Image (tube, rainbow, N blue to C red; front, side):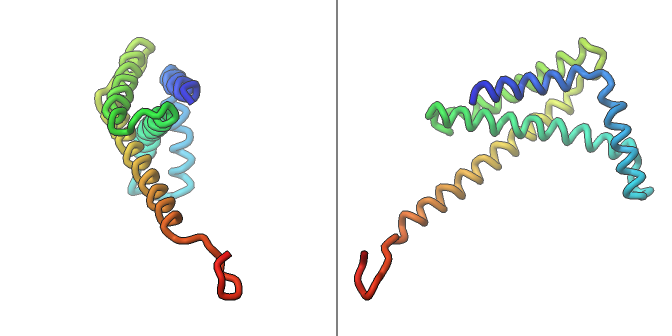
Length: 153
């Protein structure tokens, strides 16, 4: 599991190193704009939403992977949450710092979007975990005996 986290972090930095990513997403945005055929939203706005939602999603996944990894090593969730969110913020800031050296723009807004994605990833993880606990406690509370001819088997 830790290897998957490291590979995901490498993927984040790899995608940040693409100097032409804006042009690539503009092609996608133009296609979406022509398909939807609306004048209420411009190609630049669609491009903005695509680019920022990718930041959000990258760090949502990163946070969930780190939380899952801490569970694999039996680290209590309440002990790891703050460290994981801090690690996501640190990686986001290092990523923005890295972008400033390769000819891309480094923005605090992107780091805030990244930590927002991490926080939503945490909430999703906690929600799914709560549902699993509720479901498993419900199953253990119900007797699993079958009745055959008036007797329990």
